[in-house]
Length: 240
Ligand code: CAA
Image 1 (cartoon, rainbow, N blue to C red):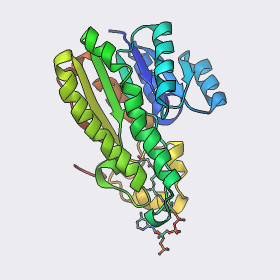
Image 2 (image 1 turned 90 degrees about the vertical axis):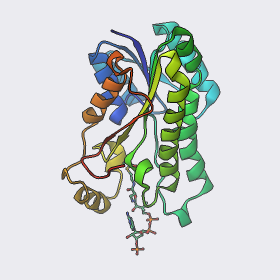
Image 3 (image 1 turned 45 degrees about the horizontal axis):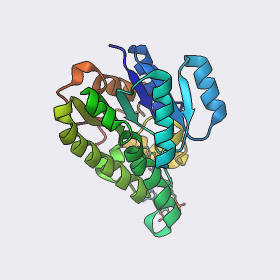
């Protein structure tokens, strides 16, 4: 059944693959982006998926943007909180700005994205919430105290939302990607990246589409009894 889906950070990286996969599954997709107008325009030209620009770290901007999407496309029934950033630094060098930026986008951004949509889902007695966490929220990561804290926090959000939404037909689940071939991972210094790949039993980085397929399943009507769970897709790098 085709539904209206919102994907934050949905024009690039893993989010781009998720937007396309949800569209292929028959949903009407709105993709948000924060800054890269050129990439968003190219994405819309290629896919026909509408993009909306706002900063997920800003509650008022998120609420206004979501209202605009719902006016254009109808009530949002599937929300994928995917937008995320890194500001990596060893803890002794990490600045309060690096901490706050990552908390704002990756953790508060999930609140800001789901909170305005939640009352409508409760009223209509249906909803699918999927939060993109990370292997590094499960195991921690050198130079990612900020990022790991947000991604672990994302798991707490879905486990709590699952309990609150279950009676209203709403599910909330997380996907924890391992290291995926996106700009974010390619930004890691090459030597470090090579040492990371050496720790992945699959012997390779994951593909964005491999994450998108997990999300499409969790967002489907068929996944109604899966609630509060975490799917790890990491090539056997880490088990939790
Ligand atoms: N484990 C242990 N030690 C490590 C390490 C690790 N993973 N990575 C770096 N180090 C060590 C280095 O060997 C070096 O040690 P020495 O001083 O003894 O040589 C030290 O830490 C680095 O110190 P620097 O002062 O040079 O560090 P820096 O300020 O230049 O920062 C860095 C470099 C930011 C840590 C850089 O190495 C880096 O980006 N590392 C990758 C971090 C990472 O894995 N990020 C994940 C990004 S992908 C993602 O987040 C997506 C997802 O969800 C999976």
